Length: 89
Image (cartoon, rainbow, N blue to C red; front, side, top):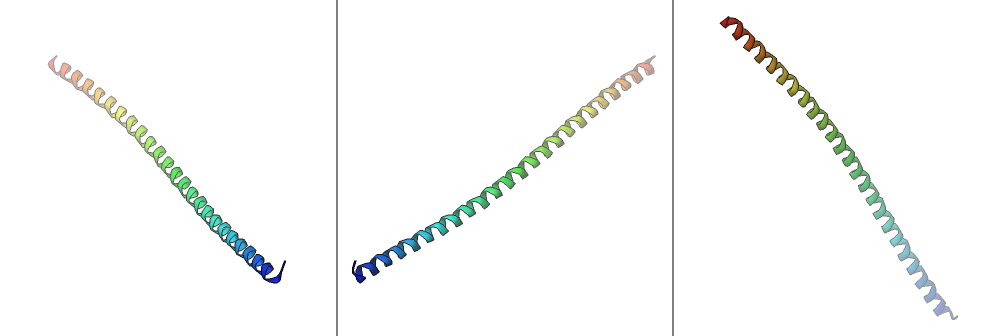
C-alpha cells in the first residue's frame, strides 16, 4: 500500500473511530438523562401513593367520625323522645 493510500486509510479510520466515540458519549449521556427521569418519576409515583394513603386514612377517620356523630344524634333523639313522654305523663 502506498503512503498516500495508507494516510487516507488511517484518516478514514480515525474519523470513523471519533464518530463512534461521539455516538457512544451521546447515547451514554442520553441514557443517563433517561435514568434520572425514571428516578424522578418513581419518586413522584411514591409521593402520590403516599398522599393517596394519607387521604384514604383521612376518609376512613371522617367516616368513623360521621358514624359516631350519627350515633350521638340518634341517642339524643331517643333521650328527647323519652323526655317528651315523661313531660306528658
